[in-house]
Image (tube, rainbow, N blue to C red; front, side, top):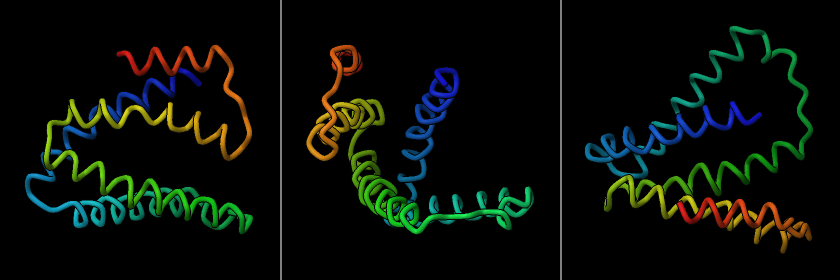
Length: 130
């Protein structure tokens, strides 16, 4: 799992640089639309070419949860991130937006009632002090 997390970090570390270049040429809502459209097209091609589209079984709760994620992270959060990138440098915006693990732990405590372990708190503090 850790190897794939590192690969994700590599991808996510590269993207703000590319997004900054795109945002020099367009506004945030247009960028979100294009990114979302490309996501849809690419994943549709992958699902149809592998036959996965015909074998999917989806619980309605999955649709509700992921619709919320799409709205919160994919549209609202992405908009704020792109606005930040269009007004500041990628290094500043990425560092500030990287406090999300702390936000996740705090919200998970409030919403799910899950208290974080000492190890997890130390990991978050270490990640915030990078």
